[in-house]
Image 1 (spheres, rainbow, N blue to C red):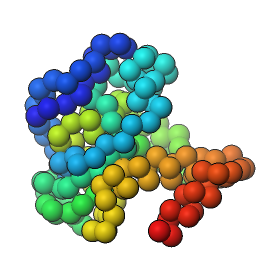
Image 2: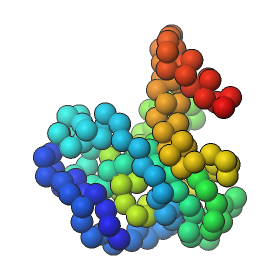
Image 3: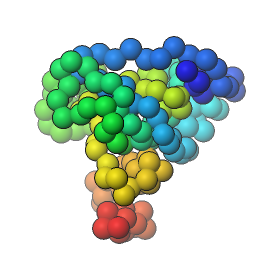
Length: 172
């Protein structure tokens, strides 16, 4: 499959990569659209290196179609349209139990493991959100970034423009 690989800061390009092998609780998503945000630029330039594993296939805000599901996956089947949440939590540590964003076994699609800048991506099924047929893949992927930003801002005590935009787009 074709993928945009970031080998190290400043060293990146389109390459041929093997199709991901899914685990028993993962789905294989054929990526239809991947958004680009400032974090992707940080990955290309080497800013925030502590959060990134090189080499890597970037892309942490993406949407597509499920083409295969692991044998323990319930609720998703081939043909389902999904938006993929990038932050992978273990669901078993203290941070996860308390609902914090401090998972002790944290990983992230597009930063610490292969992401959506590829034809296919293996995604934990719990990180997939079904999208309605009238919502485009572009809208779904772009909304992931906007909603995460609005959530973080509201937790920090202010939503300003992006919070209003997120609430408004949720009604669209």
